[in-house]
Structure formats: C-alpha cells, structure tokens
Amino acid sequence: MKTKLETTVEGQIIISPSFVQSIRRSNSVEGAKTLGAPIILDSEHICFLAFNNDGYVTFFLNNGFEISLKINYDDAKNAYNYAKMKVMYVIE
Figure 1 (tube, rainbow, N blue to C red):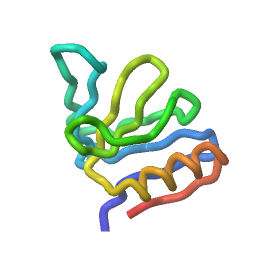
Figure 2 (cartoon, rainbow, N blue to C red):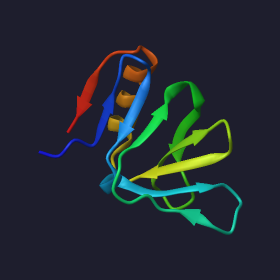
Figure 3 (tube, rainbow, N blue to C red):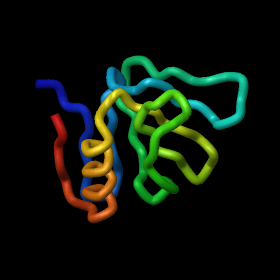
Figure 4 (cartoon, helix red, strand yellow):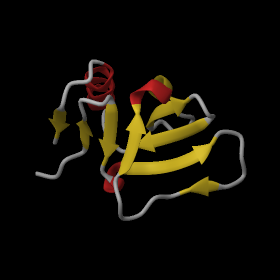
C-alpha cells in the first residue's frame, strides 16, 4: 500500500505527490502543481485545516499558500496532530 502522509519527530508532514490536488497562493491567477518529489510541510506553518472552495481537504499556511490533497479529512487531521506532537507516524 502506498504511503499518503508521514510525520516526523521534527514536526514535519511529508506528503506523497500523487495525493496533491494543487498548491497555490490563494487569490492568485497561477497555481503550482508538484510532480515527482514528496512535499515536506512544517506543522508550525499551518494556520488551519479545512476544505477549499472545490471541496478538497486543504492545509492553509501562514504564508498564504494552500495545499489541497486528495485524501480524507481524518487522515489529514491525524497527520497534523501527530506532527504537532512531534511523533513519527505513517498513514497509508
């Protein structure tokens, strides 16, 4: 089974690129799509976890970026909680 999310003892969330819907700055014309390498996200930079206008689970970051994922809300919430606790955890 393929890993969706991983958390590290440093408080980071590692997101498999195949589960990324989009990465973009809110209210901008251009979006960024990541291909290939996993995305490493520091849990200290996450403002909140919710759904975007398209209905995807989204991490909203302090710098204005949104990372939308093709996973269910509970998996994202668990990854966020484990990362904040600085516990290594794998969600498949």
